[in-house]
Length: 92
Image (cartoon, rainbow, N blue to C red; front, side):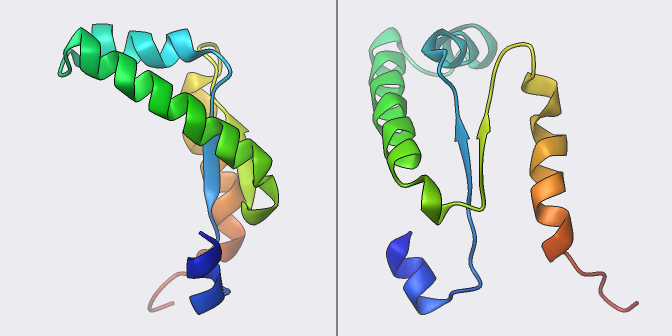
């Protein structure tokens, strides 16, 4: 991300994190059902590391949005609220 911002300062990123890794585990194992238990565990471990990196480098992100089971349905609205000031209508 720092390299991308160095190339184009107009780039901005939105970080998505969860502090409830069981939510990610549930999404992968119950809802998607595309990975083996070993693959799921690897993805959860990787996600934990990526979340820690996002939180440590929070200043590089336009926003960091926490995903919870109760608020899962509002994540898109939160992302759109961050993006809306940067979106333009073409042809108008």
